Amino acid sequence: MLRIALRHGLFAGLVLAALLLGTAPFQGVIPPWLGMVIGYAGMVGAFVFAFAAVRRARERAGGMLPFRHALGVSLLVVLVGSVCYTLTWEVLYFSRYRVSYMATYEARMVESARASGATAAEIERQRAELRAFAVKYDQPLFNAAITMLEPMPVALVMALAAAAFGRRRRTADAGTESALARA
Image: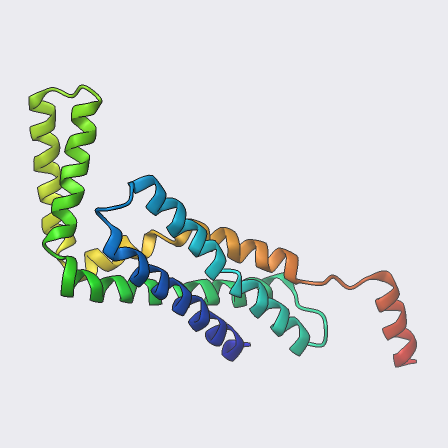
């Protein structure tokens, strides 16, 4: 089951990495809400591999897979996919976007604050907070931790759904048949 989960997790990771590589160049071009819709829809699509992995593991287990095993398989798939996503962002950020990403993010946040009617003091306080965050975000471990949190809500929901839909309970007929077969 480990091999199945790792393989499907790598497939999910490839989809997430391709999505990130394909959308990152448009960071300042498309509206933030559209980027989020595309990103999270892509995550849902990538984490469908958790369903495939649970199904494959169930087939290998003879048609029955307890919930905890199905959950373990699906969690490993989404974990591997999320790690691939995080590693891809780390490479992109530290090789290309280190300077421009936080500057663009700060500009958008300040513009949003201005549009909502924030005072000059509030905007300056927000800028100071964003600059302090940028210093932390330039540290690879902090950056990786924040990036790993991004797909987690979708990953956990998809893992639970895959485990719930992917398991098969022993039915009364199956229990009777196996009791007869043992006799």
